[in-house]
Image (tube, rainbow, N blue to C red; front, top):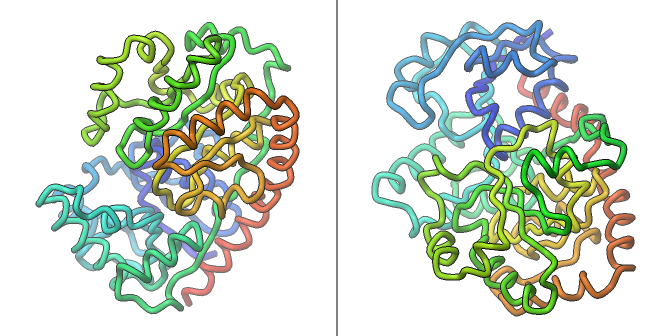
Length: 367
């Protein structure tokens, strides 16, 4: 078996961390794995109990990680970086693989600070140049990589995330009162599952939701995710909430939600709203579909590629369009059933078996 070392420090992060959580259990069946990261965090996952974990806690994007990585990575066939913060010095790996989920930092270059611009431009290009294979998560992201980075197309492999439906059981058998009580959830609500960075577009969603409340006062908006420690949080969101009392009263921030509790939130919600301007893939809509939660989503970036015909789409830059689609969803009960049924069909494209086979083929092709 090939020995693969994976930098798993971002195991609890949204997006990248979720991809790692789905990827590693599939790889362990085909390869000999060693993980780098916080042992206490990693061993909380049942699939990790008999894996070798090397303690590695240097912060992401730090000089510290660059000094430590060449010494801490053991001899292996493949070193896999789940993000573009690759080791720039040689490591004891025959080949390197990097996962570049998106190139947001290049596509929205003007929004970055000076140091962020320098780091992103240098490191993303180095990651592409120094890696033998690049894995990305959608055809949209592949096209963006080719647009912004000088790299040959043959080096890039698209591997959609594979989601194990068994990880989203209805353990509460339809009785979600305990989940609602735990997270102070209202009776009727729309769900937003993401961080609060500007490109996630919570600001426009809030503006639209204010208009929806004028007609449908029973609904609230539930925002899932830890934002208090997020340096790049969208400050305009909080300015808007401070200004608009009706939004403050009807928006619930849950903070961090345990993964085991997330299915209950999806199943309790009237719909998931996914309004992003930019996504490399976007896992929450697929997770929602698995749980029978209808999806109302942006028609931008990779989102239509992931959601297919199973979402009610809106233009993310149009508050009026978001408002119209939410009102349409509320007024048409048959639409909910249609979206749920289409969602159940759509998720077949992202099965664990398909993902496992595709990721295995990419990693075996590094010989």
